[in-house]
Image 1 (cartoon, one colour):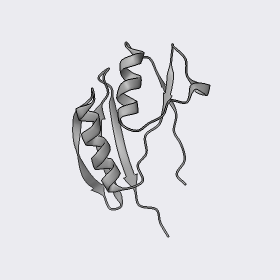
Image 2 (cartoon, helix red, strand yellow):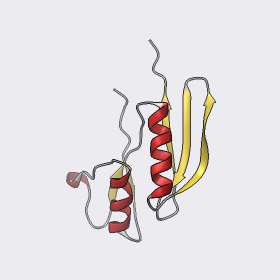
Image 3 (spheres, helix red, strand yellow):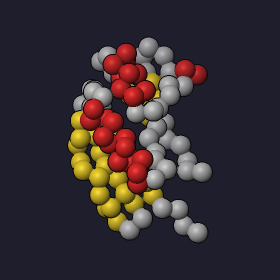
Image 4 (cartoon, helix red, strand yellow):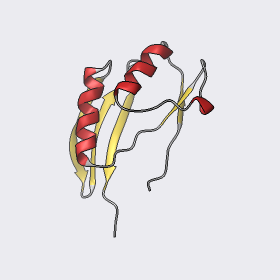
Length: 97
């Protein structure tokens, strides 16, 4: 299992951010968020998931920031922006062994 990363970010419209992230298949953890901040983490289980989430982000309030590509052997990633214009990387890394 890959490690989790949690990021706390302000948002100008929490409802819009919640809707956008939910459309990507992410669930808000209410134990670690409130009306002032939210904690988000993005990781992908496959190259196909990177592609699917990239398309979903662009169709649901975000935008394509960087096309998906194999940036180095075993690492496939794209970048999208969220409704507040922040760039997020969606990444899959091949696990050794």
